[in-house]
Image 1 (cartoon, rainbow, N blue to C red):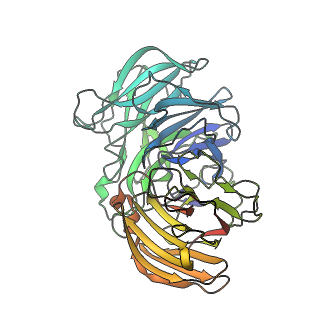
Image 2: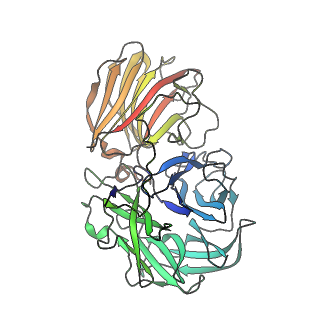
Image 3: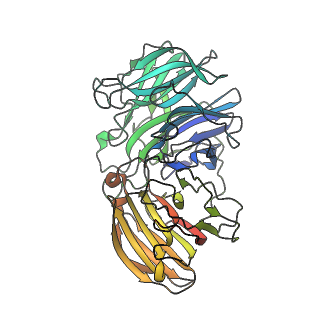
Length: 516
């Protein structure tokens, strides 16, 4: 029997939600402060996924200006009903807009609507449920007023699919599996064999993360927690287990009748450090006594499983090198927050990505001239070809390994043709190494073997030369930096706080795995 390998979406792909439309599966994940928001993936076998684009790809849909690191878009849910796709989500700590919203589309690869904001929808982690009798329901999580820290409850109201409004009476469904439950969240409702099944996460998003379930005979309750809770967790396996923090699951039934769950988990390495962030895993599910059984036979998320009973449908593999010869940026590239202006071009110098040198800096909660992609492997090579002549003493361009504005590594070509390697930890810069390079294009790179990272420099087509000593990549993990995202690799240009009319031309970007 053929098998697949977890995670099915490596790198920072947290809070996955999935739906099926006929023989097609669609999946979305959280993106926090990154724009465009909410990547939408397509699969025909649940194993191989292709990035179609993003649900929120217009500035009018997603006002992220001023959003803090790890603020922004939390925990989307995607559903399909009578030819319409719905995505509901929460924008956290927005300065122009905040709260819950819904967007719709008839083609998930096409244009999604402007958000319908729902100020009456309290809390976060919203979900939609379409019942067999034609009813539609909105569920979400909110903190209990006056409760202990982290005490939450799941509530429900009817959802009007025409007006995209909440209507009718509110019902509190559940407060968690444990008496002292914390962060009961990510509620999803299903109807299976006549029972209403409420699937939630509990215990926070880190080591104690878990999947719990409650069931009821009526959609409005009362709901009774399973005596088998938690149905899935890795907290009893210890911090040395290769897969940790399992939770935030969503269920899907294939056209052949099989059930699967997508969920988030982390893969710590070099100790309990998860530079890749929370990734998307796929787990088989069976049903016993009216409740789901995750990973039957083992009860934990495994690295490998038998493939679903569906025709295999791999997609063409993405090229390791982006030569920037397309008319638009590949959808894998993202920006930090919503750009107020267009600072990039693929046409000013064909075959190059041109970034305007602007005053904004990656050390501040702004939108600097940077485009980023996810780190997706523990062992990797990332490099770029750069043609840049600084016009001022503070101008620089190059490559960044970004966890957030206070925790990252910059490898930059600046004034005097000097390439500098700077580690930023806790909001302070620590210069690690520097070297001068001759005039002309230069190549800059990072390579990592586990948590040992090394910066590389090459003049023109010359050989790679290490810059400085290897540095410890654990400073880029959420364990060190906090937050909810994994490392992103960025092409960056800045005036260092000073205005500029310069630009930096990137001739290519290469990312490849160094894993066996």
